Length: 415
Image 1 (cartoon, helix red, strand yellow):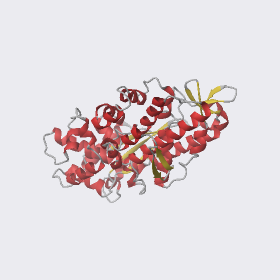
Image 2 (cartoon, one colour; image 1 turned 90 degrees about the horizontal axis):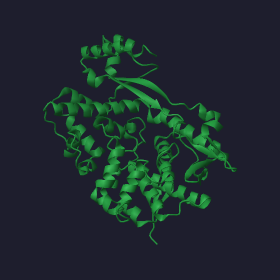
Image 3 (spheres, helix red, strand yellow; image 1 turned 45 degrees about the vertical axis):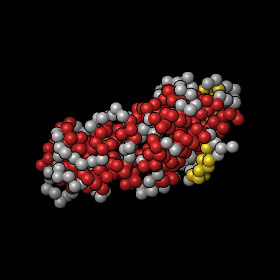
Image 4 (tube, one colour; image 1 turned 60 degrees about the horizontal axis):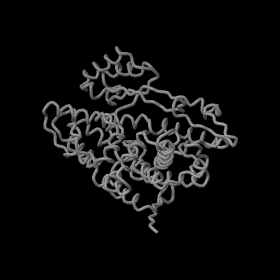
């Protein structure tokens, strides 16, 4: 019998007993995820956040394996070996399209990682050859599951919903790596709370408090870790480096950088092999070359990131008036900072519990079904919210600078 067991800090052991799924782990496109951090630039805020997308993807697979094992025993689903393989492969490959520094890279390219995931599954020869070992429609079916356009709605919900194997793994993995305890929840108990009925996944009514614990942990992870002001400021800096490089290329400036990054920044996205060669080691090497470039803006931005001289975050309670922003940009220019690269506003959205279209359904022993928000007063308080943040060079807020008083009066006016 085929069996591979990997030790894991979250799940203790990750089991592979299907040679096809193990073959997926060993294709270059998946191995690339070892070189992409799960939390992007969060390692500049939480020094332990060095774990990879590779580790998380293995964890999502293991979580799916345990969920399916539970549902088979508890509800008799799934029974189709192909559907089981599809669910496990989707969990394993759901992040294969992530770029370096994750969502920041997406914002510069204007292409979400999900689109790259779908393309890599369909277009990468090594990955596709393994998937075609099931049948010719397995890879297209896998993409349909990830797009939520398949004939497997229960599998889709386990891959992408407010209670899916992706979130179950990354919350625990991220909490452990960052050293925060408020992101922890009882995974085994949460898995046992799931049940299957008539083509859908439900939560057992008696496990209400287990799901509350999970959703509260998710809320605190967003507030305290994923949207930490220092981390968002680091993301902004990476974005501005790449935008400046793109702008210089558009102006005909010659910039030394690895070819995969050049291709992607130039918009050459016809061949996915160039994207697969792009990881954080490539980007960091590029930043080192940028730090020696004669352009003062590109050089300064790259040096700031490499030496952790990050932008200062200012959390605001309301939107910044247009006139205030214009005055701030003018002041930044007078202080020697190009406003397009050194003055940034970000609206940070804190997710709550979303009822519309994707609420979690509770089902009791009698078959009665209700939305989680109907049963839980606590969950009804978890409404999505947003706050605006301003990011500036710390020098602009330094009281020693003669223009800093004006900057501070604008930046902190809404506090």
